[in-house]
Amino acid sequence: MERKLDSVKQKQSSMINNVLKISGGTLFGQLISIATLPIYTRIFGATIIGNWTLFTSVVIIVNTFSDLGLSNAIMVEETEDDTKKLFSIITTLVLIFSLLIGFGFFMFYSFFPNKAGINPIFYAFFITILIFTQQQIQLSYSWLNRKKEYNVLMKNPVINHASAAIVAIPLGLLGYKSYGYYIGLITGEIITLLHMRRKLPKVFLNFSIKDHKSALSKHREFCFYQMPTNIVAQFKNQAPVLFIRTLFGAEILGYYSVSMKVLKIPITFLANSIGKVYYQRIVEMTKKKQDIGEFTYRNISRAAKIAIIPMSILLSLSDLACKIFLGPDFIVAGNITRIVAFNSFFTFLMMSTQGLAIVVHKQKYSLISGVTQLIGYAFGLAVGKFYFNNIYIGCIIMTIIFCFVQIVYFSKLFQVINISAYRYLKSVFASIIIIFICSAAIRIISNILGIVSGI
Image 1 (tube, one colour):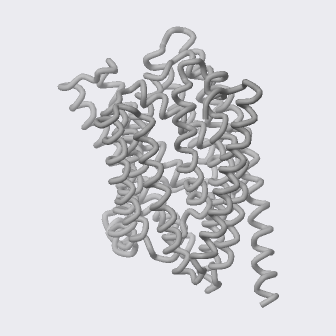
Image 2 (cartoon, helix red, strand yellow; image 1 turned 90 degrees about the vertical axis):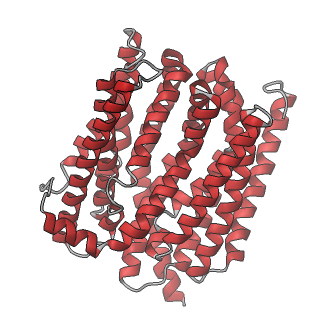
Image 3 (cartoon, one colour; image 1 turned 90 degrees about the horizontal axis):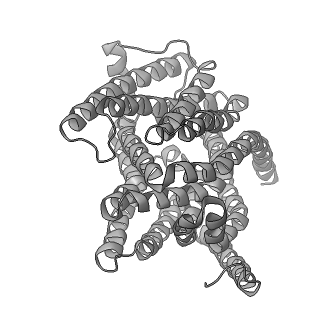
């Protein structure tokens, strides 16, 4: 038993070192993102940011099927040659899908012009590039994570955010407000992909029908189960964007988008880094027939404790921070941030244990939870719009449903890996209570000092 615990502690130590390495680059990237966000909000405004959010939301949904679900198979492929071949097959599929979707958008907006006044040719080119680069970046992350190229991964956030700012801000100041923001952000993604390209397989494309059939047959589990799960999961994640844009308009969507950017700071800085290394580690442990239960419990318990400080601050002072740093109009974004902070807490835990459902072959759990959350989002925002005409009430209902589903989802997953659901619930609820107490104390003191007003 002691030997087993020592082994777990050793793996945790190695994992922490890798997490810190990735987090170092992510920290600098997030500092750039935080520094440039007030500039973006003042130059481009909520509507432009809302439109970009809608574009990327559509692209994310498209990319759930542009690889036919094969991207996750990169981490579990057994041989180097097979992994390289699979990489080239996925790249080819994504290229074909991106060209087809881009052409479809061109035809659609040629007959039905966009209300934002964007040229159909720009729209088609923009969507094509965005679909391909975003999917390639995620695929490249999987490859580099498998190869443990953490030095490359840690530079990506800095390159992405810095490149975007260098292009977008001057274009905005020169008056190109309709296109400058979009061009800047997509430039950041292209340069990030080029940076990773140095460490990727040399074989880029594969048009062999035989190889494609072989890959689809070998990894049909990912095609038939993981792809539908990804579609539901991402549609669920993007549903608030689509629903808010439809029900409340682009400006409110812009405020919601900014609140999500604020909430993603701790997720991007810490949870993503923990999750990427965790995924790579449990894949290795599974191949060696080692138990991942205790390792996973320690990982999520540590993540819940790490989340306490950032979530307490977000829950108590987001409205003040958004008003000061982003401008008076963006206090709406701050209020939304406070409402969905607990939603972000569970997202933090989920990202810290990414890949768990795949490794234990319980993708159907993700599928069921995704469908349930999707219904919850639609219900919450519809009630907020049609019964109260209030985005805040819609977000409250949406958050309650999301948190409940996440609790049930992880309880079921922990049972699969022979960890008591009670242990998980005890750890999570302890952190939630501490977050609530700390945020309430901060809010009360801030009210007494006159820094903020109201609850």
